[in-house]
Image 1 (cartoon, rainbow, N blue to C red):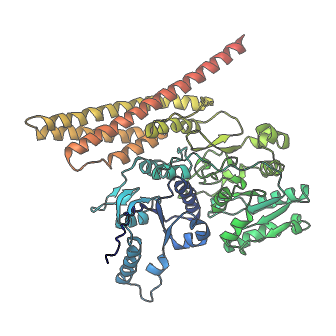
Image 2: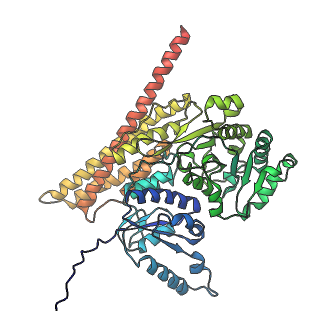
Image 3: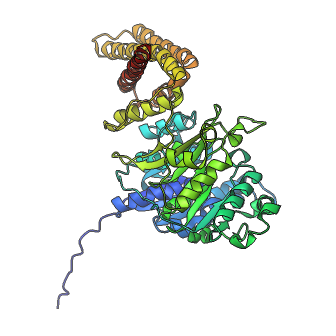
Length: 562
């Protein structure tokens, strides 16, 4: 008797994506926020996360919700756990780790951390396609995709980036979702306070927090404040609480500093709680829970990049000229700390506890023009393109850097996505007007150089395609392109607000697509062409902004004369 043959249809091989994120806890939370949206769009993709053990382990309770596999890089085990550390032992441990990563080769691997370690690691991961930085066989850094080139050239080198990091991760990975978490304005009687940060420059003095806690508890006898932090924050927490001002209010304060892990802190956060603190992993965790937050951004914390990723949150930042700074810039006196009065913080928290939206007039009723003069207040909102923007609550004339950041928002969106961005003309200060007017000449120079770059790239292609290519002529055209690139450096030294465009062009030029002179010349032409279009748009936007300022001020001056 013949057995019946049952045919099994071929199973579709699941696509695997490996994300590399070796940086700190906050970056991992932002990676999680992006990955959650990716999974909602493409549940069929198997997601693997490669992260450092010390940062990812505390977040595993969260990460397992979106990642199918989490592979931890234990740097202590590889580099520090041996009694006698040798290069061979380190290499042996690293091979074991790589075997684990490469057990199931990925369709695509994406490096979201831009340190050397992650770039070298990315080079060793087996994948059909690589997105983000990695090193080639000649030990040259390679960044092929445009959004990673943008992140590397703009975020890593200056403060003119208008995008939140979660949105940058979304754009690099290809997440199209415009969905956003929205926090509620409602009355609250509980604050989770995290008055600490990873760096001294990013956090207020303890005495200011003591003043804030005292005033809030004095005016709200039914308010409860839970303070959270790591064991390393214990001394600072004691300094905040051990002040005579708070002696009679300690019953309203629950001190959980050093007593809770990240998961327990996460469970404290809900929509009935207000989070208050500095830019930190806890503020990003609050956003994932729909907890409204007031973040005080100081030092090198950039509001537009690291604001908690949910609509309806607020970020308070100083107007200090040197803010935001870079971590490697020394500072003997943190002026940005002094420029945020504790009275403004108290007023903002009080209104949020009452369920009110923060508006300039509301703040003026509780403080003064003098106290508000030195601060910026931003509210987070997702726009039609699915990107989070930080909108200014306190209206004022913008400086040239702020105005250029708004202009770049429109320009980059058009270049990368061919999409329009809703924006009004920036209201300029007199200094900003003069500086932007001067920048117009720099944009013109750069545009002309790009046009020359296109011309000589085209000449090379035409010479190669001729019946008898002249090698000497091709070398001459290549020398002209090198000369053009050198002139860009001169322009960059003169026009600091054009750094994002010129740095992006430099990174793009160093990552031309192609394996022969024809392909490289075509890629060079397209790179100059993209930069030329971008500069043309920036020229138009600056010119219209400057013209709008002139119209407004001419009208005002004419009225005053009459």
